[in-house]
Image 1 (cartoon, rainbow, N blue to C red):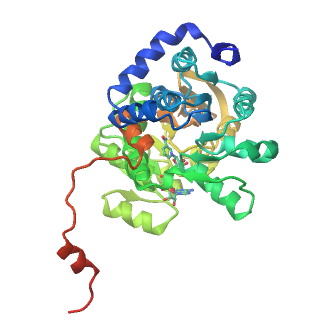
Image 2: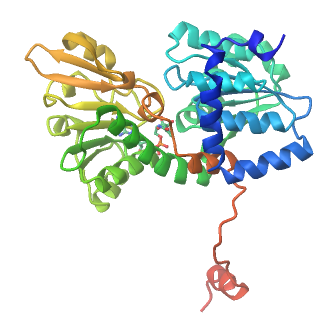
Length: 384
Ligand SMILES: NC(=O)c1ccc[n+]([C@@H]2O[C@H](COP(=O)([O-])OP(=O)(O)OC[C@H]3O[C@@H](n4cnc5c(N)ncnc54)[C@H](O)[C@@H]3O)[C@@H](O)[C@H]2O)c1
């Protein structure tokens, strides 16, 4: 069977547009270009099957093609049902990659796709958020014997991996990509900071300057989202549960308060905590009319969608990716991209250069000063 026969995708005829998108990011991903040339020559993955469960858009597609150039038989599925770009997936299949994904998959279809990916029996896999790792361990532990190891991209996935490791449940070696400084420093902060606002602005077509933006969570992603909101001219409020992060946000020039106090003030809300129920019924009850909520954390649990549906007397789509919820007192609030990570559900994800860094990680060539022997000795000494 060829890749198309094995795949479950929307429409192979979309491939030309997908190829254009991949070619565009390729011109801005010099490190991956270099790795592709190296892999093509050295074939490090010859004879190996690699499964990739990532947000399927142009940059991750290029990563899949780079791994394929290194000799691997590559299969992909999505790590989020709303971030899949059907044209990009079609281009991958057209390039010989097997794909199980379409945009807007139901939960059942989404997990069915990851199930199919697991059953390609890979030697190595890349996960983002931990759904594939979790499916392997909970449903198909016997298949783990074939696995050499995996890599996990994001904070939330690594939190899940650590929980598994602490319970003695993790049966395979995993690389915690997110623990690399080049990941959280640049990807989480600058990538999420820019791409979350790109998605919110292109989806709503509203001004940010002069508005009040509430950012929930002042970790790596939250810092980026808050920094870019300030740059756009917004008044920024941060909510936190960690007092040190709260003080850091104050020192960075933001107001810090509880969500219940910020809720009546915000025009935009962006959650980036990796936690659940960060915006709940008590906050929704006091939000302004026309408040807009978006989530940039990994799962769609940060904004309580059950509470929204319970409280609403009317709901519907105002336009693609903007759902309204009207309450009994007449107020309407809006949720972007189903409360799934907004920069991917309603945008194209991180900028190409950021993903280049993330994928290539330590293979950097930055011009920086190096310590002289004298400086090294000085910094390591304690004697007068
Ligand atoms: N959108 C993207 O493209 C993207 C990129 C990278 C990471 N992520 C995801 O974003 C989330 C955050 O990642 P991070 O690297 O910033 O993590 P982090 O651990 O650095 O930061 C999370 C912050 O949220 C705070 N927090 C937790 N519960 C809270 C609550 N109830 N109210 C307010 N603050 C709370 C924590 O104290 C912490 O400071 C994770 O789910 C991660 O997987 C998304």
